[in-house]
Length: 382
Image (cartoon, rainbow, N blue to C red; front, side, top):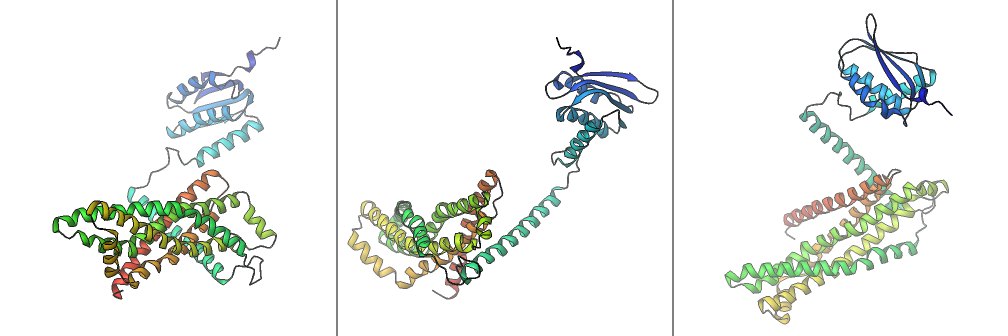
């Protein structure tokens, strides 16, 4: 029968002339380290005399045992107690050094000096500025490469794949029609109901047609469509390109001589530029249809009177004021989604983070762009 008494980890304390001698023996492995964990924690909070840890009687040691020993050394270091390790084998010495280096690099180490909140604020601002500049450079590279040409083969200038473009138009445009129609119709109905409710106090419910027509055609139609496309298609672009990046398919395209921008990004950007204006037109009709229905039911404005008043309140400039924004918003959504997809690392966590970042950044920039267009239109009296 095997004698296991020597495999049990043991700790003994003795007083030397100038230090406390801690003698370790037995097997310090994951299976048995729990037997001495509480005893080692008690030594960590002992007196402040210098300490010598003797490892010459240790039979075996793995990472768990080395971590417990390093925890004792770190506790003594925090208390200012001098600690020496003696008698360790070559393998135990290597393991202890590796564990010590890992503990020193741990960002959660409570012994690290905490910086002032003001410094952390400026550090965060600086990192955000640098990250934003890097994203801008990457976006300009992708946009420039796309405009320069859709090279499917590196060095060639004409290799456009119409099938890929039409496939993306079907996925991003045709596939998005139901959700765009539903959301736009609901938004148009809500705007009409709230406008009619407020204008009723002034006996001017008919002017809800002007309100809905101008607001939908100039602002809400294209903006709501762009936000929905950013959440639906932008996230899909980031996830697709990011998954290819994780599986090293993007690198494989480069190895076989294909341009990743031409193969992956160009068809999606072209599809968005084509699909978003078309979806904006559909969203405008859906929103006006919802507003017309609510005006008829809630304010007794018949559809004929609604259409007549709409023709008198809007013109082609009102319609084109919204449609002009659509291609620019499509480029922004596609470019940001592609940049974030190419930034994906090798983990699923990175993919999720970049998809979230893609949607948030795209929506934020689209809203900013809509505000800039509004100021530009006001400046030129359009």
